Length: 209
Image 1 (cartoon, rainbow, N blue to C red):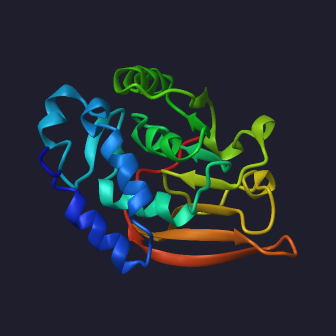
Image 2: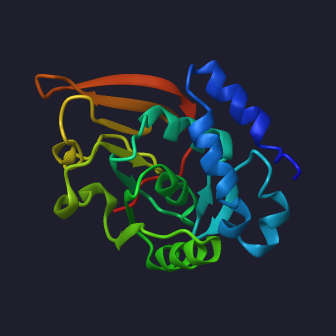
């Protein structure tokens, strides 16, 4: 089978950041990205680039998705919440790592697309709701990790309250200036506070509410 173009840059990014590649790469090989993009974009599904999916939204480049997921350090028993489902690709990868995958999508149309894409890709067991991602999913909390796929200026206050406790993480793109975003990691300390770590520059669509 032909190695997808995204694999080399994905390995390079994970190595640069000191992240373990094999678990997330196995998930990416099992989930066909072409099932999650519009038909006229499928010839580029194997490239390491962002692609449009409609409604002003995009599917991020595979190397970035891989780095974000790897940084969460998920275990089989981890409960993870994704904010911003889009086409469902990132949630499908998360579901390969843990059966406790929850996702909130703002656009009903994209939620319907995600469900259809999961069926086409043979992905099962993802819990999805349509709503305001800033509110999280309190009824299903606590979570070991929360992954945001859209940019925000201030971390929504409802999200840290839905983390399990020490070592739990939130990861997402924070707006740090005009046209500037930084992938940021918040980790719960033993005393319940949050440590914030700036990671690297990114560009995401805004988080809607």
